[in-house]
Image (cartoon, rainbow, N blue to C red; front, side, top):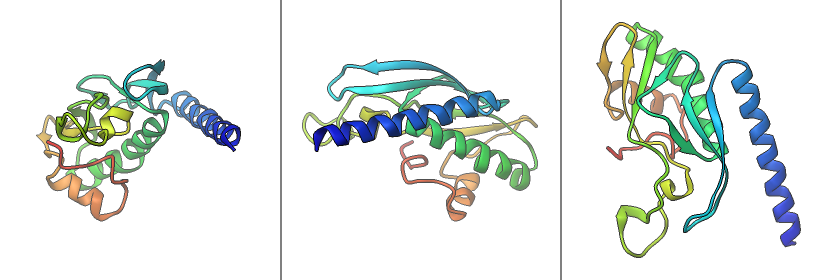
Length: 161
């Protein structure tokens, strides 16, 4: 049974990496493979995202392959179209507070690991538009429009500011 679970996880991971490579070839994302990380909670096949096509980042960030795919979909299918249609300017940059941090929830000495500890969270803070507008603390207008339209999973956009 354990071998079947490992095989299934490896197959899913291989599929995830293939999707990432296709997204990179299409110009949706720029990233480098980071490999494995031996920490309190070992992580495999992490990627460091450096940009989403023409959308820049305040800094690169380290995430699981699954979150890399999800964040690419978030930017290309939700944030970019909504910035243009709702705020009348293309999205130029995403400011964020990071992703990976090996810690427990609320930095407590004991307790369950946070989503940052497994590279499954990306803490967005604001957006910059091509017209120069620096807007939208994530809990503001654009974020609520995105949430209302059900474009996000619970781990991509939270009130962790």
